[in-house]
Amino acid sequence: MGLIIKLLITGVAVVLASYILPGVHIDSFLTALILAVVLALLNAIVRPILVILTIPVTILTLGLFLLVINALIILLADYLIAGFTVDGFLWALIFSLVLSVINAILDMIF
Image 1 (cartoon, rainbow, N blue to C red):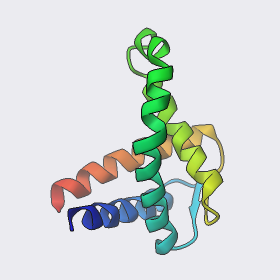
Image 2: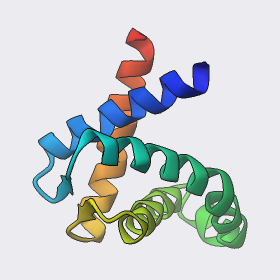
Image 3: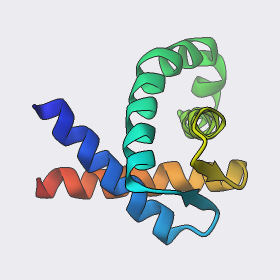
């Protein structure tokens, strides 16, 4: 039950972030829920592999390279989901930051 609520909160956060950012477009709330599931899967499978492969760069940049990894995961989700588009790498980076902030606020409320 907690996973379903977390996915719904992430779906709402995606819709809110797409309203705030002009470079991110999403078709419907169903697409936002699909995006939440895909992001959860990518963060569980792909992100740890990327983090391990980029440990030297992450240490050299004092962890800021993890923001780049988040943006790459957003761009990968853009490639995989038809109703979700991001206009570029910078918008993906900003979207990941805004999504994290909105998600944290919604998690505190619910």
